Amino acid sequence: MKNTVETLMQMKARGEKISQLTCYDYSIACLLDQAGVDSVLVGDSLGMTMQGYETTLPVTMEEMILYGRSVVRGCKNAFVIMDMPFMSYQVSVEQAVSNGGRLIKETGANGVKLEGGGAVVSQIRALVDSGIPVCAHIGMTPQSVNLFGGFKVQGKGEANAERVLQDALAVQEAGAFMCVLECVPPKLAALITKKTEMITIGIGAGKGCDGQVLVWQDMLGITGFQPKFVKQFGEFGKMITEAFQAYHGEVKSGAFPEEIHTYGKSDCSDEFLKQLDEKY
Image (cartoon, rainbow, N blue to C red; front, top):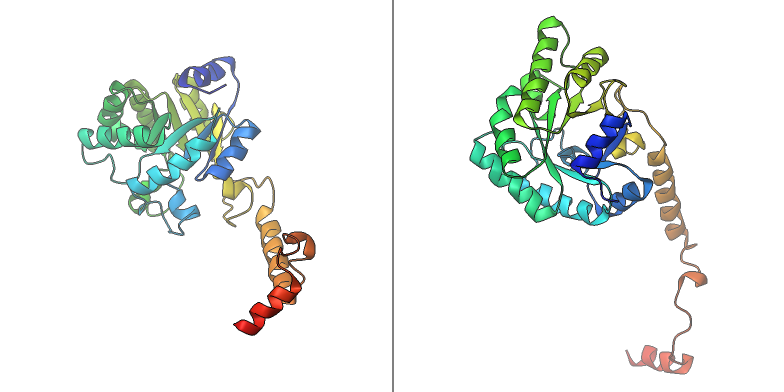
């Protein structure tokens, strides 16, 4: 059964935790969907995980649409959210609605996510008024990495904690149904979850949130990136490397392919093949 805003809100009302993972391609989308993951985020983190950039900033709308289409095809049940990339919504409300509409229309996704608190409430309100479900993103917002001076915890200290709470209340008032809380102290994240009706999705924000999100490559040990908030549920990076090494070795030695990996005998006789050999 396809998850919707309504079914996800019902999970929150029941106290049922919501699982979310990032995804960027069809094959992994199929696996996440089969595993029963509730929501999939096509994150602009693809700039780092799939394209090798040091930040998310270079990612374009066209790239988000290309990756997003593939993910949506693989998700029959999971609720798919598209990240709005850097400078695709900050310039104006009109820009935000136009690009948010493109992400929904050209990928088939179910909602969009944009970073920021009080500064983007006009964009959130306009997107929601246009019929587009919005997930907000506050705390440590990767698109502001240059402003923050790096990927740093947000909400430490009384003044900053109040600012993050105010951001949460502002994006909820603007119509966001969900909000990612990234690298926010756990007690503050729990308070935000208590004070708001929207779904809170934590990443480095503790158990008090309504759900959790991780980058799938991080949680499977593919990237080698393991900050404090990442739990590795498998060391698949090592397994994949070993498999590649085994393949490389067998190709070099001639052990692969064996006869069972070929399509049997030729329809041509050995005599005919000998004639071809002599002719050419």
